[in-house]
Amino acid sequence: MYLWRAVDSEGEVLDNLVQSRRNKKTALKLMRKLLKKQGFAPDTFVTDKLPSYGAALRDLGVTEKHLTGGRSNNRAENSHLSVRQRERRMQGFKCKTSDLI
Image (cartoon, rainbow, N blue to C red):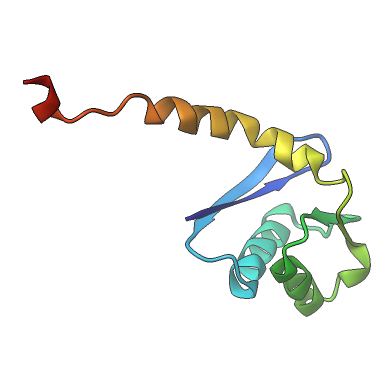
C-alpha cells in the first residue's frame, strides 16, 4: 500500500489517500480530489520524480506549474516524519504466545 499525501507551502497536510498502486490513474484521482476540495489551482505543484505525477498533470493541463527534484520536495518529506515514527512504534517487539509457554 502507498500513502499519497498533499502538503501546502506551510507544511500542513491537505489530504491523504492510501492506494495499492502508484500509477497515473491514482495520481489523477488525488489531484482532482485536491483541486475540487481547495476550489482553485495552486501556483506550482512540487512533487518527487515519480512519472505518474507528470502524466496526471499533463492530463489536467498544468505542466508549466510542475516542479521536481532538488530540495523542493523537503516540506512534504518532513511532514511525513510523524507518520513514520508512529509506524515504527506500532511494530514494537513481536513474539508468539507459544514462545511464552
